[in-house]
Amino acid sequence: MSTLFLARAMQRRSFFRVAGATVAASTLVLAGCGDDPDPAPAPVDNGLALVGFDANRNPIDDGLLNYAYLLEQLEAAFYQKVVAAPPADLLPGELGYLTDLRDHELIHREYLKTILGSRAYDATLSTPLEFNFSTFTLTTRVGVWTAARQLEDIGVAAYNGAGKLLVQKYNLIALSKIASVEARHAALAHELLQSDSFASTVGADGLDDAKTPVEVLALLEPYLPIKVSAADLSTT
Image 1 (cartoon, helix red, strand yellow):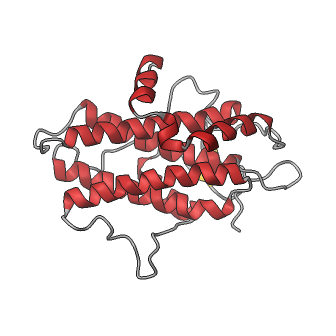
Image 2 (cartoon, rainbow, N blue to C red; image 1 turned 60 degrees about the horizontal axis):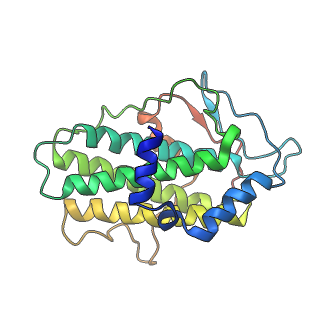
């Protein structure tokens, strides 16, 4: 993504409107000044091991932030692919929706990348990961919105499940704000596929789904070009 595009996206969908002005700014500052050590990014040659503890086995957020970063990379790549070659049967206005969703995901991706800095798992890669969307039918509007619904539902469940595992409050607040945006995306995809289904994932308890990183990574496996392990993430 070019710097020009990101600047344009920032102007159009102000970063502070997406992630929250005060919290986002504080998070960036705190992330740069925090007490967390800087473990080397996990290797990606044969797979990615998300690291949730420092050398003294104290829990840290790096693994979960990289987990969210990977998820946002995937979602951004999906919408970039769809917007670049949209299906011919999209209804009026739907390309605009998809473009907005792409812009949100790009901002989320770049936000997490900025927080992680050299601790981003792909910081030393010369080219970005290429995700596999071949299992989706992206030549029809139903196929596109079905895929979007699936990815957004996974994203919402992923953030809901990861929140309790975060150590730093500022990370919890920032990722919770991103989760609220993802929930809106999911609601839109549901509604465009079936009227009055925007809240169909909300259970009888009034809550949305929550999944552990292990559960989410299993769902994402068909789309990922690498094996990702959550074995070294905290589970409580």
